[in-house]
Each structure stands twice: as structure tokens, then as C-alpha cells.
Length: 115
Length: 116
Image: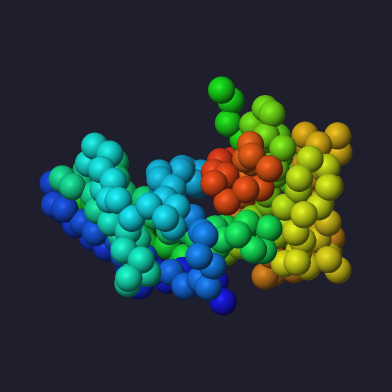
């Protein structure tokens, strides 16, 4: 079965703290893609990153970084020096080769960054 | 480049009434998706179109939900009759590659439906 688990329901930090959002996935496919989306209060899902199953290289983009580890089926997301504008719900999603490539989303992690 | 457009943004109806949502995808995107997002949960795919053909509607409650994508561009999602449990945000997304695994979906702002 295909599944994404985001165990952290809510995280609250003070501005400038680093924060890591956890994502664990399950799939029997050898070819799959993992995504992170941000959903601010406005409601629109904003694409952040896509990673394929053959590329375990970590990625850094400004204050954002992603750690993909196939050995533990995890794709964690770290925000360095968090800002109030980072407050949102963050979703991890899995897309696999079967099932018409639909996205399977986790339940999301609500991040609140306080000044 | 304009993003995915959806209307209305908000809708409140009584149970057993009908409602329709509209989506205009990013220009040139062949694949269109409708998702249902219940409060506190991640989005769940309802239906996926490739041009104007249905690719996957396995999770669409077909006794009350219907969707169409005429001419392979705009799409309409309808609920008739609505139930209380249909209260959710309905998100439309589109993508540009032929439903390949590298395809990235871009989402609209959603329609928040409240059924009383």
C-alpha cells in the first residue's frame, strides 16, 4: 500500500529557530517521486520541491533543506532561521508509477512561527 | 504565467442542495485534477482528466459527484445532492506532462464548501 505519514500534527517555534518536519512514506514501487507543498492561510498549495527515488542527494534552497533517506523511507524538511512568514501547513506527498501517478498526501504538519 | 483559477472561493448551501465548482487550469496543461481536502487532513484525489478523458475516478462518489472537462480545458465539479460530510475545500490542480511520475501538479486557491 502507498502511504505517507507526518507524525507531527503541530509545531510551534520562535522566530529564528531551526525546525525539521518529518515525513515517512511507504511504497512497493522502485520508481517514485516525493514532494513537499506549503499551504498558507490563503489555502493554495504551493509546490516547494520534487525528489525522485533514484536521487538521494540532499538539497538546499536558501533557508530550506531536504534530507532524503531511502534506508529509512524518510524525506524530512528543515527550515533554518524560521520566520513568521513560514507559518503554514506543510504537506509531504508521494507519487508512484502505478495508480495513474496520483499524489498521496500526508495529513500535514501545522507550523506556527512566533515573533 | 497565470496560475490555476477556481470559482467560487466560498460556498454555503443546505444539505440536499446542489452545487458546482469551476476550474481553469494553467494554459497548455493537459492533465487536470480535483481533490477534496477535509479539515485537518491532506488532499484526496477525486478525479483526474487527461485532456477531456477521465484517467482515474476511483475515489469519486459517483452517486452524487460528477465532473466534466469539455474541450480539454475548463472543468466543472458538481455535487447533487450535497451531504453534511461534503463540507471541505475542493482543490483543482493541473500539470503539463502526460501523467508521468516527474509531473508536478500546480494547485488553485480552492473552493471552501460548507454544507448546513
